[in-house]
Length: 227
Image 1 (cartoon, rainbow, N blue to C red):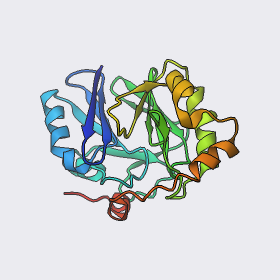
Image 2: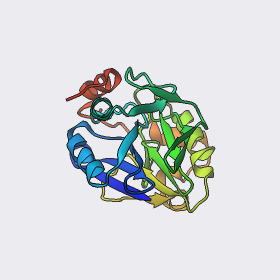
Image 3: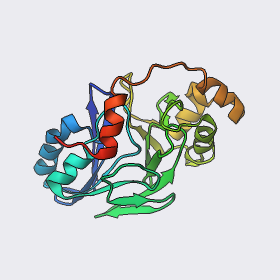
């Protein structure tokens, strides 16, 4: 399998390129518009045909390359059915399967960070967007976020996966590249709670500043900004 984890320094975003082998179909998860040319170079070197681009949610900290990649490659754009994006060609439902040439993912509706947040699981790994971060979880104070829904998404869905499942988030700010479900259950400080109320007490009192790009990124990602 081809698996490329790429990092955008400006927004601390991880983007993933996945394919079953050289010369096969590929998908990209959570791309950043400024890095579009780098993605296309990698695709060309590996002789990959981009057929699907997935965003885990409407991002507030960067402009997605989803629409730009669609313009360049005529790929299918994929998000969860709750997304407000106007450039999505395939909206998937909870537990719906997404397949390309030799690669299979399952869409998991995981609201909480935003009301349109989805995770995408393969057999041995899960792309968690901002729902589950490494030693953290996504904030719940904008874009119709909900601490109680985040708790339910985490504890009744994501953390039910096998403990050896690899965790690949959309962001990391400390240089961590991946984790496991088991490691997050044991060591993630925001998961050491006994109830939804206890979790909400943590999340509702973070008092974080809004992302610097929020006023630009959210409308751009809804409309599908291109270069």
